[in-house]
Image (cartoon, rainbow over all chains, first blue to last red; front, side, top):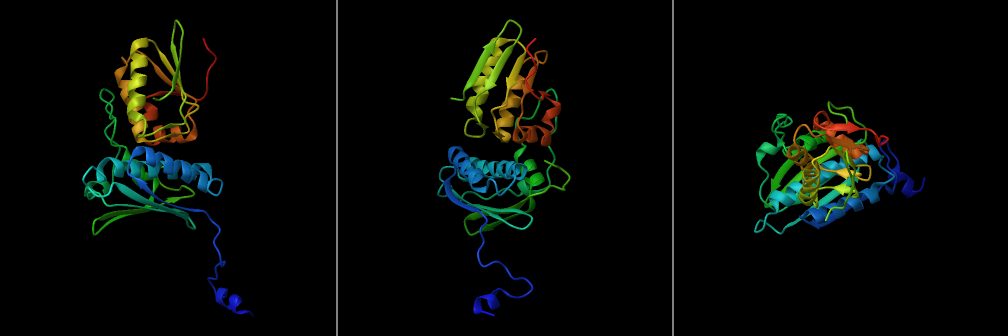
Length: 164
Length: 108
C-alpha cells in the first residue's frame, strides 16, 4: 500500500479531490448585483443541480440577499457589501450569507405564516421570510461582532410540509 | 425599463412580458409600467409570462399591486407560467387569487 492509499483508507475514506462546483462571491448589497450573482450561480451549478432544486435555491437566495440589500446595508450601516458562499453537500446545498449591516430583527426567524389573505386588501409583501423558512432546512442566524451570519441548507429533494 | 409587448384588440389586452426575470431589480418599474398599461386599457388582460424564468417575492408583490389596481370585474389572466414562477404563486397561495392558465389559448 502506498502512502497515499494509506491516507485515504479507513471507513470514511474520501476521494482526494472534490470536483463538485461551489460558489463564492463578495457583492454590493443592491438588487442589480444580487441579480448578477444569482445568474452566475445558476450557470455554475447547472447541470450538477437539477432545475427544481436550482429554482428553490435561487428563490431563497434572492429573498435573503434582497432583504440584506433593503434593510441591513442601508447607507451609513456598514460597508454595503455582503458575502455569499454555496457548497454542495450530501443532502442539499449549504449556503452562508454574511454582511456587516444592522442586526437582523429576531422576528424574522420566528415561525411564520402567510400574511392574511384578505381578498379585499391583498398583501403586497411579507412573503420573503415565509418562503425562506419553508424552503430551507437548518436555518440559523448569529451575530458575530459587527457581522450578520445566516446559514441554511436547500435540500435536493423535498419531503417537507411545503413542496415546491 | 421593463419590456412589455402590448397587443390590443377590441375585446382584450394581451401583454407579453419580454423579460427573463421579475425581481427586486425591476419590480417597481415593472409594476408602474404594467399598471399604467392595464389602467389605460380598461379591458380584460391576458399576461403572457412564458419568457419569465425567475420571479421573487418583490415581483409577486408587483403582480398583486397591478391586480389590485384593476376593478375586480376586469379579469387578469396569467398564462404560460414557467416552473419557477408557478412555484412562487403556489407557495404563497396567490394561485387562488389570480386566474392562471397553463398555456396560450386560441384567441377568441
